[in-house]
Image (cartoon, rainbow, N blue to C red; front, side, top):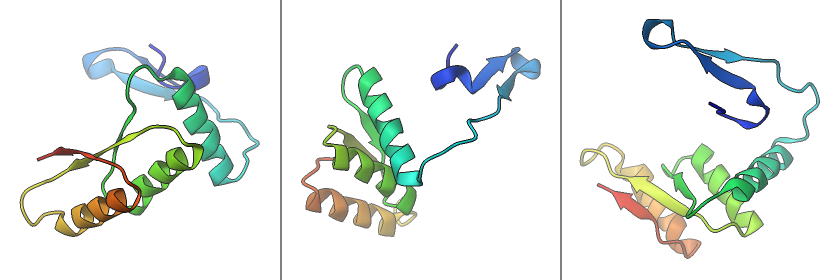
Length: 109
């Protein structure tokens, strides 16, 4: 089972013996934006069907969404509404962002 490119992570065992092994990462990295661009391009090259992104309205998921938008890669933001009042601020921000970017999010309530 391949979890990521070049098998940096690989599972072994089952049940109580299940582990995920992690090998050393490359020692040379570009800046965060360039590495994010490379990752998004790789995801796009392997994509089958629509690409969905869990979008919380937070900084991390917005950064990822912006990378895909920067590259012009079609992506559907997925916004999850929790118990009423739990994440209202984030949800409102996520909807505003999607509207400004002319994106139609998939909403899970």
